[in-house]
Image (tube, rainbow, N blue to C red):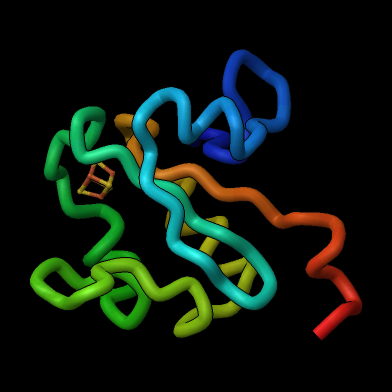
Length: 95
Ligand code: SF4
């Protein structure tokens, strides 16, 4: 199982992901990041939760369509590391 909240064992930062070419998909409680260059089109994400990940929809990722824990579970099934997530501390408890 991947831990796609981390790179090299450390929690990823937004700066790192944007520099690597990931695109940010905002959510209320978490943000999801995606790199089309890293994606291997295995499809674990869309099979995991088609409400959150739907190819052909704009935006194709809608974090708020799923629960945070479930989103993290699905993101961690991405074998390529093309999906990453960040749960910004400031989003916890502030709505
Ligand atoms: S699981 Fe990862 S590699 Fe597979 S299609 Fe989704 S984003 Fe791409």
